[in-house]
Length: 240
Image 1 (cartoon, rainbow, N blue to C red):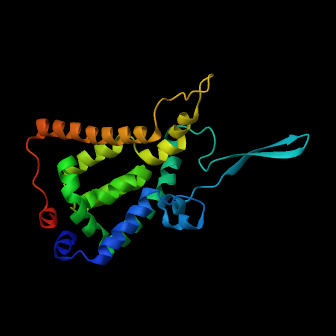
Image 2 (image 1 turned 60 degrees about the horizontal axis):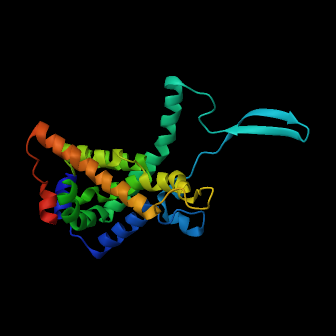
Image 3 (image 1 turned 90 degrees about the vertical axis):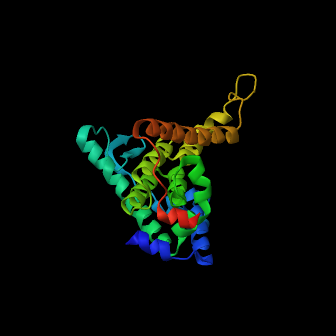
């Protein structure tokens, strides 16, 4: 039913505005504690606080040690369950936002604009564009949005497999790179030269290139195992 309604909907100026907002919202461009952080997914998603797990008495008084919501020293299925609980707010928030943006036509605009680009590169439709952008900032949000696209029939099973390989390689690559990997580019040798003879831009570029390479390697594998590729969905043919 949803797929039929998508075929009838026209892409308007409002659809493109909703798409532009979605790109900014899920890309991490406005990730900050400043006022404009309200337009960023990760900032609004927030973080769990810490709880006290021990109090030590020192010469200066009482000192409390804190740990995350998952506690300290957990293991096995119980720790895995608590970890899964931390994913629920991210997934629910992402799905809620994508439903709102879909109502205003963002997915229709993405399908029309991005299908000519993503179809030849990875054989996935433009409707997966928002999930692709979200996956660069949050692996959980990207996975949830991809599952929703598959359940609603906006992408086929084969397209979902290829797209999942793209996400699986360096998940949440932008956030992880700049939060942990970027510090390597500030290290220097004893003579003052930079320890990493490369630029951050080149490193990010290589991550993106090999994400696409990985998706296409898996695409070739599926072609060898399952045969010919599936035909595009009717909504894509109309968008193209």
